[in-house]
Image (tube, rainbow over all chains, first blue to last red):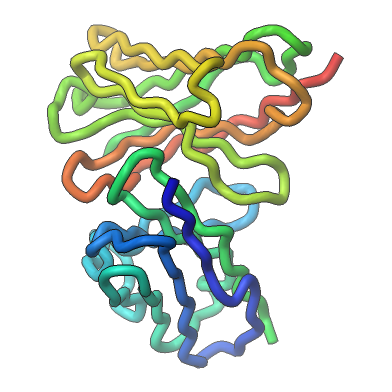
Length: 107
Length: 120
């Protein structure tokens, strides 16, 4: 199985901050990396697919980059509705696997 | 936009079988562009992919659960199902059904999730 490691596991930030979350795969996954946002009691929501493609309806302050084993999700200017947990997911090979999550909290 | 809705018992006794269904609101279940997955999340923990089924009926299961999992599909009813046998307390989780894009394998639509508790 491909292991996905996210860092940090949590971070504190303020509205307006630039936030970067990292995801590392245990082997190369090319660009087969997706990012999700999850709020408490809600299902995950797709933000970014194939490493850098913005899902329809997702604000442009979200962006993704990377290839191979190292990927980042960036929120250019954190908004109040962005406080949530973020997960990466590799879609390179079965079984599909998720990172452990990064919780973005209010500073 | 497509909607997915889980259904099934919220309480299951060990070592019985957990059975859940997912109804899809549109005809995309008949499309070769998507596959249909089950994903679970134990309380306070991360996401675990259980497996998927294609409209043709072909399946792939997470090896960690493969011996206990069956996913089936009824395209005439826009419905697919999950059965997980020999459950224990470790199977207590929120279970989500989700639509996956064949290209990119991202889960673009999810059900709201249903908490299934395994307890005697």
